[in-house]
Amino acid sequence: MLLDMPGRIGLLDLVIIAAYLLGIVAIGCYAGFKKRQEGAASQYFLAAHSLRWPSIGMALFATNISCLHLVSLAQAGFDSGLLMGNFEWMAAFTLVLLSLFFVPFYIRSKVATLPDFLEQRYCRECRDWLAVVSMVAAVVFHIAFPLSAGWIVLHGVFGIEKWTCILVICGLTAVYTVLGGLAAVVMTETIQAIVLIAGAGVITAFAYVKVGGWGEMSAYLHGAGESIKLSVLRSPAVEKDLPWYAIFLGYPVLGIWYWCADQTIVQRVLGAKDENHARIGPLFCAIIKILPVFIFVLPGLMFYVILRTGGLKGVHVTNSKEVYGIMIKELLPGGLFGVMAAALMAALMGNLSSAANSISTMFSYDLWKRFRPQTSERRLVVIGRTATFLSFVLGIALVPLLDMYESIFAAINDVIAHIAPPITCVFVLGVFWGKTSGRSAKYTMWLGSALGAALFALKTLHAWKPATFAWIPAFFYITPFMLMAFYMFCACAILQVGLTLAMPKLATEDVQRLYWAHPLEALRSAGWPGIGDYRILAALVVLVMVGLYVVFR
Image 1: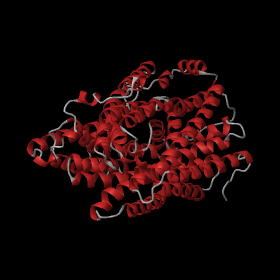
Image 2: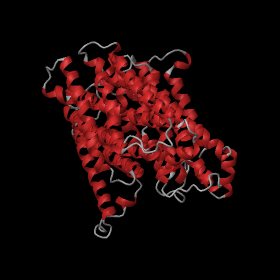
Image 3: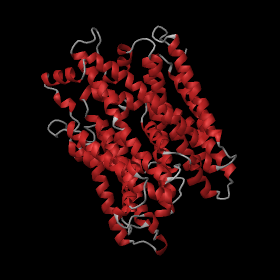
Image 4: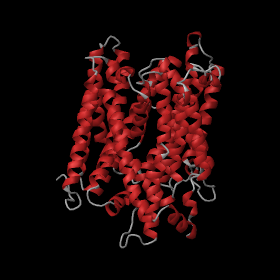
């Protein structure tokens, strides 16, 4: 049975849902075949380098946001206020880094994948390791985890049966992703980002009206002694897991890996028409990243106040993970369920298509062509489509296993904190320190990954059986994951610098075009005239974000 809640889902809602699903598939297929050159790998994997900055920015946003974000950020707003908004606002700063310092090398080196960039900058082993890690991360973080969270949301709110939801969403997404490649993915992600923002804006507006506006909400929180919920930066005395210094030290480590060194994200930039479009796209996304705090996190806080002030009689929240679903049911009038269903499906489909496309690109270029370099362009596209389909199958297969996690969002961030540091380290030192060698990068990635796995295992073992594993030093399980990421990054940086001094670059490794002789060199490239200059826009983004932190500190 597709829907278990016919009383809540009206005919108009069903029409909206069906129109959205069929429309997005049709648009994706059209975009993929519009300018298709039969068998052209660059067209399939990189949209023939035709992407412009608005599409890049919207696609970056849609790739990042999933059902998991919608639900968990609303839950975070309900539980702790604006604190988790740091994950959205700090992203803007790392997107500025992507635009200013990383994009030029990615575009000038004409790479199809970031593992390819690492080979050009360092060595083949670095490429192989990053390709494997990135593909595993894409399947787990961008396909399996979103599916595991997405079906719960769509079932709880709209009554869509679990495997019907998973198979229909994956099947429809696979159609245009497999057939159309990156052009189809970016076109649909642009639309999905608009639908997602519109849907989130609708429920935010209803929550804002119901709570009585910002003044009423603020007055209640101050009167109840909970004004800290309106702050994004908190002292360790108030917030031991995410104090302000942990955020500022740890997030850049996670953020640079996610926004600057993860193929699933950066592939949109690699398909840019030229360097300026590639620079402006991330800056546009940085501006959009202001919104989630107000349309994802804040509604959860407003709903908290609504319930505390008796705005909804007889409504109780026993598990804060259900907040977003309850908000949709209680705040939205009939006829708008279809809009929210489209928004949630947009978030889920955007994640799935972007991950599958990046996996197919890395598998085709970084693995298949290594062992079969004579593969034709047409054959490579067939291999890529097969890899895309198999990534969906593998993601679906992992769903039953991941359903066992109680807190998926916390699990993702904890795992990322132990994966990101060595990758962030080799990218940062590779771009900003010309002396770093391929051998040092190779061993840093291997040993850093082993260190992360060991630390995560120690923490997991202690959480599993505290008494049995009481011998584990407290540092490994009481240190906030953001600080642990920073400590690991420092350890990896020391390791790579030491290894570089012990094993300097070989004569064949001096690729001067792939690192900055001086950081300011990154700002010397010509930009568009006037306000369109990437340097002016980057400065404006930083000023806006600093202003927001001052206001909501």
